[in-house]
Amino acid sequence: MDKLIIRGGRRLKGEVTISGAKNAALPIMAASLLSSGYSTIHKVPNLRDIMTMGRLLANLGAGFHYEEQKAIINTEKIKIFEAPYDLVRTMRASILVLGPLLAKFGCAKVSLPGGCAIGARPINLHLMGLEKMGADVKLESGYVIARAKRLRGASIYFDMPTVTGTENLMMAATLARGTTFLENAAREPEVADFASALISMGARIKGAGESIIEIEGVDELRPMNYSIIPDRIEAGTFMTIAGITGSDITLKECRIEHLDALIMKLRDAGLLFEKREEGLRVLGPAKLKSTNIKTMPYPGFPTDMQAQFMALMSVADGTSIIKETIFENRFMHVAELMRMGADIVVEGGISTVKGISKLKGAPLMATDLRASASLVVAALAAKGETEIRRIYHLDRGYEKMEEKLRKIGADVKRVNE
Image (cartoon, rainbow, N blue to C red; front, side, top):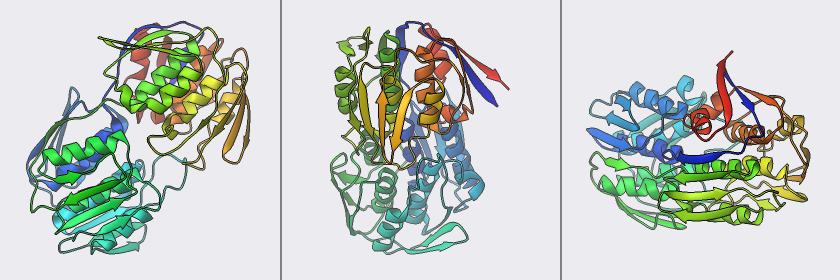
């Protein structure tokens, strides 16, 4: 098992190329099941979760090949319609094969999902929507078993926006008879990008990126040749790194229009941003200022940036209030930041962070994907050496992070324990 060893306190300078968005790549890979033939997906990051999805597709009978940011998936010989527990338990996004298997082949058996331990994240909204579209859905021995001769269009209202729920039902609706309306749908940029990939396959979709999505079913879809958007959370993480280390970092392949809420709060904290031909230049201040955040569904402040922002606020001037409204267990990084000297008090879904002058290096343990990123952010600014264990969490969502950091001057090395 690998760990990262980071010696903090360096100012960083240089360019970082942002990888493709994991949260766009995973549903787009699953969508390949809706067609028969070779799909090619470009700018796919080389991540643990991507390879897990590739193994899952291969288990269903698909051909999967990955090379140089490109995934090639052949769905001509799909013959198994079951996603087993051993594959699904490590990654919640595995549930995304449910919609396309049911829509294309009329049956699916998918293990209830696992992934990061940051909250319950139930899939009841997925199942409710499929039932409204005419599917027979049962839960047996930890598996979702769904059948339908052909799904039919329906009007479906989500009690709360759900990204994977929106994507699963979009895929199911593309091959359904009639028109489906998804109301209170997720509006994330990854959902809009996913819709663009489906449209490239011949799907008829309107309103993706808005709260109501309309999908008119078609008889068949063709394979895709599609390039995904850059990862806004990776970009945001490097913005917080620039902020906490007082550095000058230029982000290439960064879509700033996807990060409005985060950039607004980072400006409040003292960061400066300059649009340049080569990318977005991010300048960290000599002293950070405290500011409050409240996580919300897009276009609000992203929950996937809450942990990294808390690391930033741990050395800001003043006291900040951080309210988490999306996942009930997403403060597990707090105990590790406190091991570095951070002054944080948690009450329910609210953390009060009193900034200190300097964090100190310590042995740390990553608990989930974004928590691991927050520990890297903190370690880069801390005095002395920090060891971060269980970085397989980091590898689920950040491509070659230590290499990108070394390129801009960080003292980071990966060690096999």
